[in-house]
Structures are given as structure tokens and as C-alpha cells.
Length: 456
Image (cartoon, rainbow, N blue to C red):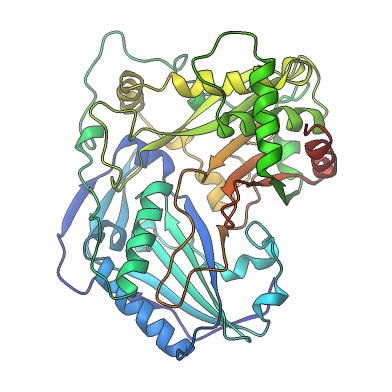
């Protein structure tokens, strides 16, 4: 870990004007995120004519302003039983922490996003506290010896998904620069029937239609995942240039024999590629059932479409399954097609049926990944033989100018979840993509080797 000194205790930043006070029902998609916090970080050069104190003061003041329209983020969660939550909009505020680091920005390296070595650049969530005391948005401002600084954040996933979080950060940066709010958040969760009872559809949706909420697939020969959980993970940042990506897409398109209305996207191609490379690196048997989890944004798939500025969770996971032998022996187009088939089944009808399925579950506890967040040992394991894709390719993740220039670097926080990988577009805008991969240590060297060996 980096040597960091914290400046006293944290401060609480509340909305600067009165906001609506009351209970906001959370949708089933919000409920499934539950206790998860999403960390990310932004690095900035030393600003002219600004000290650490003035930067902190400016950020706190602008945060208090932007929390007025984004007031759910200043509230607190509350258990209502059966693994479900509601949101108390009570203006309790966000948490703001200041810290100092004796190193300069040049000393900390380029791959800090997923590394545990840089974990204390991100605000820490104290899960020993009751949930109704946990802030939903935490900020850590760390200043470096060179005068540069980082803004590390932790965002409650129960309140908003990645698209909503990026919208908030964009507006916060805009307000900090002295501008007015550009696009207010859309806070109405009624489209997902938040807080309403099931419709009582006949027949009701079943687990067969939504295998994502069943028991995770195990490695052949294992009766549980206890041994897999013990294995340490490591991370790697793997770059795919624009030229390599074009060749990968050509490989996928040329190798798929069925007629297609359009070629495979870069997302479908990279997901299929990572999935099959992971099978090889892990040494899966041909008959092993392998799984890839992809995240789908329902905003443009609803009828009518949800506003882009919907502030809540409109994303959810879907899975594709295949025998590892097929993934490894068949061309790339096969794996890419599996990813496409899975995401294309997500229609308005599918989404509304999923909401009904989740509402019919008496208790959500066993379906929510709280054990990992709380560091418990007995929860389900979502790693090997599974990989999980998190795509930031379509989100505006760069160019957040708080008044001191655009960031030098932006990336996700530390990751220890086996099989998780982020797809991040290059900040240079050159069309390249970075795959930020987390994998069990035993397989990472082979994964990196095959990742570039199999590249056309």
C-alpha cells in the first residue's frame, strides 16, 4: 500500500439547499446491486494558483450544490426485510476525506486502477456500521508531493448504475467549473414498478428463463467452490490496438458461417476472445460448462425508451454458456455469437418479465452478492469457470475537468474478483481498448501469453 497520511477525520457534505425528504422505493434492479460500492479514480496535474486547501474547499462547495438535484445520493439505505431495501432521502450527505501522499504522480505507475497497492487512494466503506449510517457517495482527495492530486470515489451501486454515476460526475465537474447544471437526473422509478407488488402473471416467470439467479456453475470434479475461493488473484492491463481490434473483428466475422445482418461489434468480439482465452489458460476440460456474464443497459431497450439521464439501476447481468471444448476448438465467431445471442434476447418484454420474476422471489438474500462485500466465506463464488465483462466502452469516462484541466488518468478501482474484466477505451482516442483483467494467479501468465499469441 502507498504511504498516505489522512488529514483528521472525514467531513460530511450535505445539499446546500433543502431537498425532498421522504422514502423512495427502490426497483428490483436496484435491490440486486445492494451493498456493492463502485470505486473509480481521477488523477490531475498540479494546478496553477491553487493549493490543496482551496481544491478541497472548492470540491466540497460544488458537491453540496450538485447534491441538490441528485438528492438520492445524499440519503441512506434502510432494510425492509427479506433482503430488500428502501432509500431514505434525508439529506444526511456524502463523505469527504482529505489525504496526503509523499510520492509524486510519476512514482505510482500506470496500472494503478486495479492494483491493491493503490487501494488507499480510494475511500474506504466501513461495513461494520449499520446500513442506515453508511453514506452512499464517498470522496477522497489525495494530494501528492508534486502538487498533483487524485479524486477517488466510491459510489453505492444500490442507488445508481455506471451510466448514472458518470452523469453525476460530469455534472459535478461542470458545477465545480462554475457552470450551471446541464441535464437534471430523471429520478422516477415507476417504469420498473418500484415498490409495487407482483402483477400475478400466469404462468409466472421461472428460473429456467433467468439462469443468472441460479447456483453458479462448478468446475468438473468439485462439489463446491471452497478451494477456488482460497486462490489468490492478480490483475493485468492488456492493450488491444485499433489495428489488432480490426483484425480480431475480421477474424470473428469471417469465421461465422451463418448469415448476419451486421458484423460483430468490438464488445461482442473482445468478450468472445477473452472468454475462450480464459478457458485455455485455466486448462478447462472439453466437457466443462463455461460461462460469461455480460451487463446489459435497458435504457434503449425499453418501450418507450428510458431517458439517458435515468438515475438508478437500469443495467443487469445476463449469461451465455457453452462447453469449453467448443469455445476453444471452434473459431472466434462462435464465441462472439454466443455473446450476441444472449444480449439480443433482452427486449422490453424480457425486462418486464425479469422485474416480475424478481418481485416473485420471497427473499432476495441468497441472490445478492453481499458476502463478497462483507468479506464472508460462505457465499457463492462467481469466478472460475466464469468470466464477467464490465464495459465502459460506450460511457464518457474521460474529460472530467473540475476547473484544473482534464485528468491525466481515469480508471476503475482495485479488483480481486476472479474472472472480472473491464473494457476501457484508450484516453488517447486512438481507437485502442484496454482489457483490465483479474484472474487467479496460477493462470495469469498463461492468459497473458495466449492473449497476444492468439491475436491475428
